[in-house]
Length: 306
Image 1 (cartoon, rainbow, N blue to C red):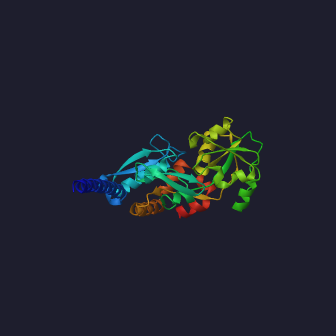
Image 2: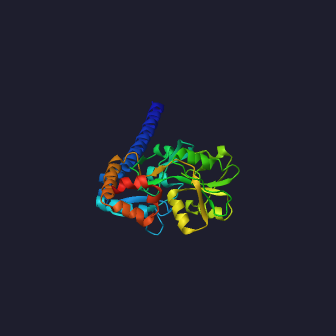
Image 3: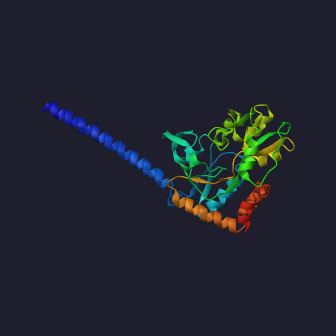
């Protein structure tokens, strides 16, 4: 009897511990979910904007296209605003609370981490693997990935055609033997565009995405790939020293990202975005931070300005 009582008490103790742990996990997961709702953000009184210092989306000095955009969204919601600074390595984890590994378009969840913000808006390109982790808003900015070299490069810019596929094909035929600098697990990963299949030697850059163009000037590669907003910044920053050879991708879009349980916040953001596109606020921000963008993407911006 004593043995049975001892075992039973021990088993009950273990069950209580398991139930306690389960309740704690339930409460924790519930609190994370609650934080993602529009109602919870309004109750908290602060919208947490996750942003990577990148191009003119976030200058790192409290300004930028995305910074102003999300501040306006916070005003629209009637709440305060806070920036959560991230890197390209952790930006999605800060939003989702998930640690993961990416291989091509496949994603493997490897663990959990702290959720630090409510949305990402930072020049984030919509990519298939990212769609597996987050919800994307309506397009915020058009983009494309270009091959960029120092002006001293023997490569000459292609002559554009009216066929995007042919333009990409022209560029890829020029890259055999070139050492191309890129950034892993971003939209500037050369493997995403199959550049290795055309004889390019791929090298990954350990520094910040903003420094890719400068790294090529310093001899770390023959060329790099930049998305349009960053290339426009580079052209302005180093006039006469940067040469755009042509596109290595079809046209893409950038958007703001939301957690999978934040559909209400996403819906409200899309309403806000449509409003500022219709009243001229949006195009004013574009011309302030990317004045050349309407020249390169007239179709996108004509729709906005109508």
